[in-house]
Image (cartoon, rainbow, N blue to C red; front, side, top):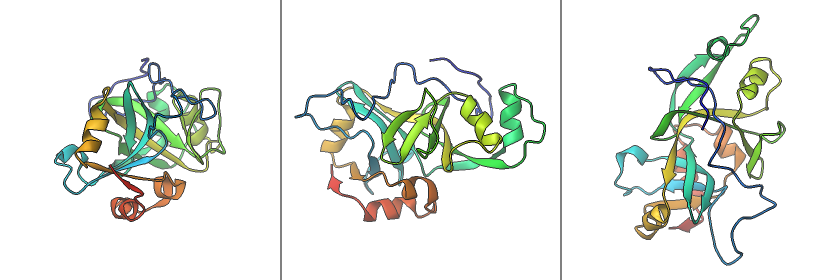
Length: 208
């Protein structure tokens, strides 16, 4: 993985290439038809999950296959950062840059690793589809576009991720630690973060 920056406080890094994660195009499934994986769905923590790091969390799964899983927690905001500060961090001109963006704790793994989840009206060569209406882009240019009001209509910037090794998430499923729910863009971008877990629970479709 290539990092643009590491920073002590909130580790306001700026985006990494998803090397080694390699999100698949939705039109080219990488698993056999009989295998069922959860890429592009929400994981909703069960009330009895037993891990304080994931208590009442909602995770958007970017990838899930026989080699493991990777997802972004979408309901742990950790504060706002001025766009000018982010531009300064990546060495871009801050002239005329105004406004701020919320930053989320995406998970306990590699808190310096940054991800931008966004609506599909925005696309670069590096953009990968996650689910209907949802995509992820991991180059610093998306921050530049957001700062200049040329970015996606909806975006969520998160640092860190939740990761599972081969079979690990399946084991947690067997222990009924998670529910699943459709990855509705309205839940991901617009829902009140204080209510998101409850709203996702109300939409759960499967007990794992």
